[in-house]
Image 1 (cartoon, rainbow, N blue to C red):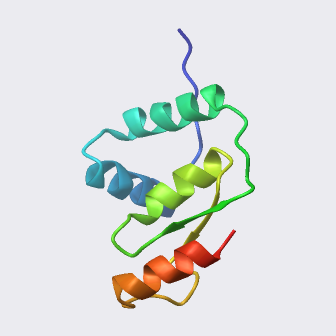
Image 2: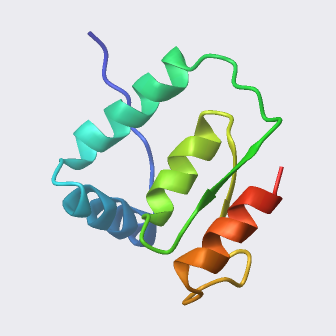
Length: 95
C-alpha cells in the first residue's frame, strides 16, 4: 500500500472537511471514494442530460459529472423555488 500527499490551501481543506462532515465520513474516506469512482468508471453515454432539483445536494451533480454524466441543476437553470410540476416539465424537455 502507498501513501499520497496532496497540497491543499486552507480554504480547500475546510471545504473538503465540510463535505466529508455532511456525508459522515472522514476526509480520507471521501477522497478514497472519489478516487475509486474515477478508477472504476465505465464509459457513460452523454446523449441525455440529468437534471437535479434543489433537494439534491450539489455534490451529487459534481460526482455524476466526474463519472462522465451530463448534469444540470435547478440553480444553473434559474429554476430554484419552482413547483415540482414545472421542474418535471423542464426535466422532460432537455436532452
